[in-house]
Amino acid sequence: MLGSLMSVSMLAATEFEIEFKPRDFESPNAIASFECPPSIWNPELLSRDISVPVQLGLDGLLYVQMDDLESPFERQFRLRNRASDPVSRLRVWVEHHGGEFTFQDNAGPLIRYQGAPSELPRDGIDPVFRRGGYLHPLWTPSGRIVSDDYPENHLHHHGVWVSWTKTEFDSRQPNFWEMGNRKGTVEFVAVDHYWGGAVFGGLRARHRYVDLTLSESVVVLSETWNVKVYASPSGQKAFHLVDLHFVQQCATDKPVKFPKYRYGGLGFRGRGEWDGAKNASFMTASGETDRIKGHATRAAWCSIGGMIDRQKVGLAILCHPSNFRAPQPMRLHPSEPFFCYAPAQLGDWAIKPGMPYESRYRFVIFDGEPNPELLNQIWQDYAHPIEVTVKPIVAFKTDK
Image (cartoon, rainbow, N blue to C red; front, side):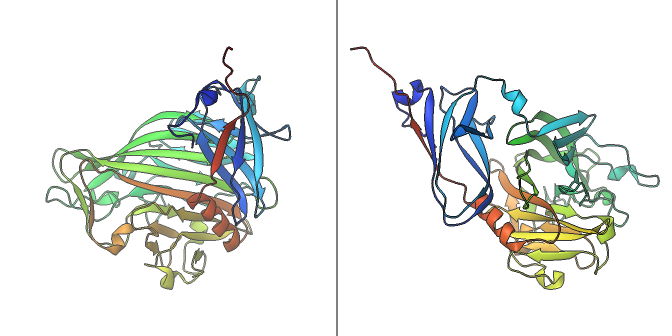
């Protein structure tokens, strides 16, 4: 980060030397970010005159993506303004149709964010289950879908979603997870912005948690989703990488309380073909593959997978170390392809007015068996981003 000590030469320089600090672990898909110098508005990053994907984010940071960095490594780059239009360098883009926002790259679709609720997928589903504000489908590099939506035995499960089950608000017990009981729901509000880019595409969306236990509904929580979908790395370790950062805030002057409970929080529902105790496989970061033994344990990541079209595929969910109660305890369902990071397993807690609740998760979507070594490397990259040093090459010149 450049911080507050930016010199006059930083402000006037037209080129910069970018140095990435060496680390003692390999990086299969390193993503670094640093503050963009004010004189750079159309960034181009070069290594030996070879352009490296770089993107200026809405937060004012420059994002860089590098594949298969060996351990230890040290790389120096040159940053300057690009003469050409950066739109031509899009590697991830968004196709928007109605309430659907589908992220794609040159190889095909990556994920879809379902904003405004779509029509129910089949007859016989109670309209109370109609919902938006979740991720589905999620595709592997081979084009196979790992997620499910409106499964027969749990109509309130939707790909990747966030909700709370056992809650207390103003002496009532709304349930935002099990929508069929009509005690609560999560509503899509709006997509404020979406974009494509050379490193990632993304969107910012808003949802709200509605207490339905009274004759007049009450919004108790507001939620913001920030989604980033990264360009697929090259080589034999290809996978899709997605980040979800969500923030929840009290919508009233009263807290929302969460008594101890076995699930509620970030949920994932796998393919219908994986339903049944023998049809889905789990693996936690601690190496546990027995879903009964893995339930209620804490781990930095967990993978879930199964067979689709005679091919093993899967998804891993990584829990950021800054999350509340990280590594968070997990719900591994004994017979269904369902996973949840559930902080309430460790006891009562609450979201209080003026004290937002934030969580970050990374999703790795892959073909084949889960590779624990690779997933540990990706988690290290996620938990410990590369440190970056920025130095001006062309300094400000004063008159003599």
